[in-house]
Image 1: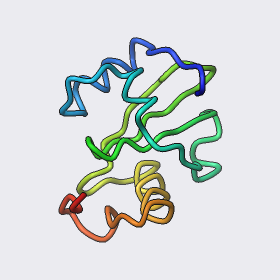
Image 2: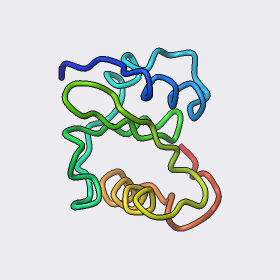
Image 3: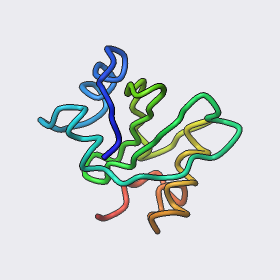
Image 4: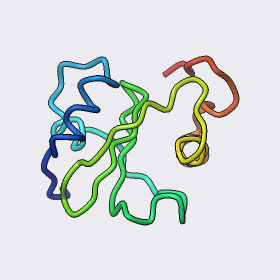
Length: 102
């Protein structure tokens, strides 16, 4: 298991972007490890896809620094992340503005 703590920004993003009662650190451990698109996320040293909430948790220096909702229409760096999730997990987030079935 990778060591991780919930930074204030990451915890705040988790609370606003994930519809879950799970703590952000617990969510990290129950999520699926993934590879990030580069160079868009060069400062991030770990990422996990949390399928139950359609989010990706981002870690830098053992701290969860952000949580991105990848459902629906996204742009910029989030779009590259959405496409990476689709490639790695067989989801179809980037094909539609609809949330894919789990």
